[in-house]
Length: 197
Ligand SMILES: Nc1ncnc2c1ncn2[C@@H]1O[C@H](COP(=O)(O)OP(=O)(O)O)[C@@H](O)[C@H]1O
Ligand SMILES: Cc1cn([C@H]2C[C@H](O)[C@@H](COP(=O)(O)O)O2)c(=O)[nH]c1=O
Ligand SMILES: [Zn+2]
Image (cartoon, rainbow, N blue to C red):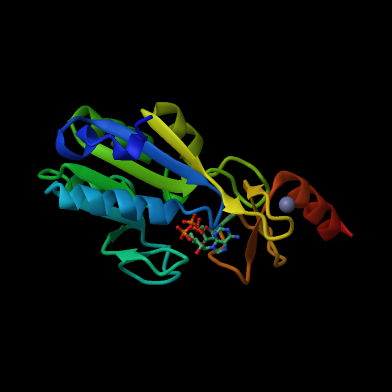
């Protein structure tokens, strides 16, 4: 079997496509995005990586994984800015896509229709288990969706959910291990019940 990300034609041929990497927090989305972008650079592709300017968690500029892998990026406020930076580009990477406006769906389609490979990483669900921002539509229009998993910190199974461990009901709350833990479905349901007590 040839893995999507090891299909070398994607790294060398200029062919428009949309790849989505989704999952819970700590599932390796950013690491996988960085890995694909670095491979594209080795293949002498012209790459540009974007992140929402609101995500200042580890760095204002770089994209940084929980394991401290990093790559330079361009922070932007709205999805429309992506089109201003991508005239001579072969591969576009987008991290934390859940924080972007719904215009991102049309932007990604436009890029792919113009022959650009678009690689998007983002949370599929918020801490309540609801679909997050433009991610459901991005999954729908993608050529390929990779769902990655963290390890449930309570039982060691695969985790799909990001449980918020601090009291705050807003959908947007930047954070890491002090604010969130990855859980499997069973452990997430039990944790949410316990939070109500
Ligand atoms: N419970 C966990 N399960 C898996 N990885 C974890 C966990 N807690 C911390 N990590 C670390 O997080 C890294 C993945 O980080 P990252 O790519 O930034 O994830 P994401 O972007 O999905 O939040 C792993 O390589 C691992 O070192
Ligand atoms: C679940 C959830 C998360 N967030 C924030 C917390 C982090 O800053 C990012 C996710 O980063 P990661 O690279 O996937 O670890 O999103 C949020 O604002 N609201 C939520 O419900
Ligand atoms: Zn569990």
